[in-house]
Length: 253
Image (cartoon, rainbow, N blue to C red; front, side, top):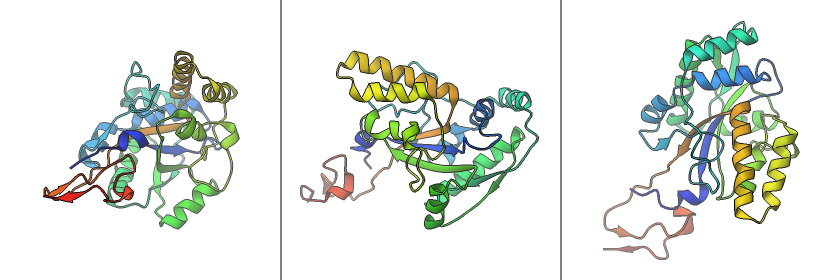
């Protein structure tokens, strides 16, 4: 079993939260939703340990990922208090599971149970891959699972999910949550242009703290995708592209 090469792609999963609609447009509600989630149980039960709990929008393998922010943790009492603060009355929310197999279905069921424990009612809205794409493309959801690769650099794989310029119908892999913050936009723009590594790090450190505070999505896990192969097969993975890179350098013992 190997996970070699996934550091380059740095996959991160999350629950997309439709920031356009109440009560999800309230930052306290989004914080409460995140605090209700038992990410550690999800990691163990759904992913069989092949995942790590993150501390924010950067996979820890990504350059300039902050290590001083605490991992996202569960606090049901604080979640209930935040929900009371915003006056949430138990309106049901639609959750779109990711139609990529049993693991994501388990995650949806755990999520529904976690949220119910703090008083957030969730109705699962299962669909096929085409339907999932269409509904995210058209912003027809309250909550939805997704995961994206961050491609080794925040300018390539992170900014697209949180900048205002990437709010555009037609793709499930941009800023589909509709989050908009001019300061976040400016920081990502500066980070893309900055050549000095120290200054670039400071920019990305600041934007990570801002995003964690505002919780535009509920980050779930840094994902590992192991490859299982026969012991006689040597060198099956040659680059970050993984098995899709071919077997030109693989050989049998």
